[in-house]
Image: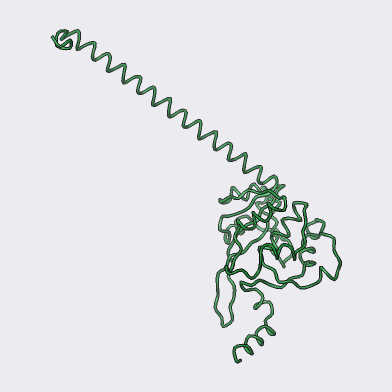
Length: 247
């Protein structure tokens, strides 16, 4: 009873804190739509009553909502939450689960692990990044949890990206600052995924070229060795003809 009263008091005093645990957070779909509109994107049509309703969601569902809108295939937040879940036994939705869900909705993406070079691919495309975020706990403790955010519009001149991290409005950040909490795991979409495939194709061609060069060098060395061995045998046969013939 005392524990229940304590939780009720904390929920009333700190609703955002209590709602931000493994079970998810409370957010309106209209809040995500505002993020899209600030970025110059069109939000999914819907009634105000539907969009202004508080929903239990997660950063994974929020990132998927934004990604679907960026890809031109928006879906209701409640459907995304239902598909990804907010009360699963594990405290975090995996990046692979997000990729599978987006693929089922017709959005293709490429999973990648890397660093600055990956962020440099996010120009006309976009990406979902897996990061870490410290979370304050009741009693003064701090817990580091997984977190998802969306980035796009990389500017190679300023070295900045546009960051979508609900409920905050989109903002520009230096790539170096994005790298700090980023785990290196990401999903690339659109031209970003195409840039990754071109890079991988280039790396594959380079690797094949290096392998072919190594094979040719090996064959050349074997050929030279055989020629030297053949020459040595001919010299011995000339000096000791009977011995080499077994006579």
